[in-house]
Image 1 (cartoon, one colour):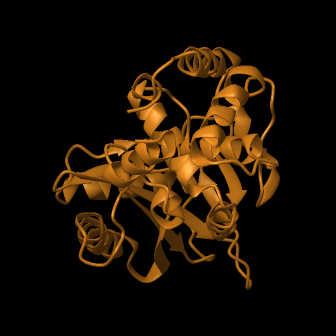
Image 2 (image 1 turned 180 degrees about the vertical axis):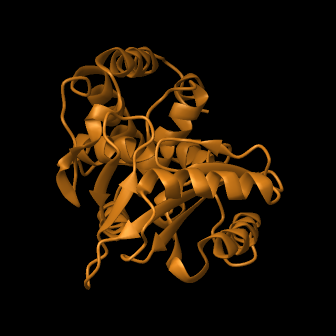
Length: 254
């Protein structure tokens, strides 16, 4: 088996199925019905987002991301919305619901689901305000459609999935969108095979990642690389260097 074949098999085993009727789709639909009752008349739309919509989701991490767009005339503050969704979900079938940075995390039939509430800015754009739970600011402006299109059009889906598997193997704290941006940057001018490309990603993470700045393509005022401290970035860089020095692919990613 070649290195590329090994990695392709690994991707096939770990990739989340997204077709209608899959476990992930069924879980997303079930949780969304609870969300609709919470949002009521202020619901503008609900859609798949994050790794699920980008087709970069892997098993064992969040399987489904649901973006909840509330109307621009919603009067509650972003914090009230975030806390209100968490409280509602916890009382309506998901007592172990957990607050994350911009989402509420639940588990439905062993499928992990992230719920991202947001308020539409109005007009014809897809711009929204998101509540930021863990940063020194209450809100950030972004556009999830821009994120989805940016990643899906990058041509780096397989390399992103491999990097997410590697992240999971080593229990690393690297937010998914940050990871996706880093992989795309690492492979900006690469036209090699899958194995060589993934080694290039590890090279980049071990040498350039800590000092690199990444901006939200939908809002350059939102600095994605600020989501981790330098110390947290150095942990990722150190592990990338260790993995890069391994002699067997089964010790690099599995």
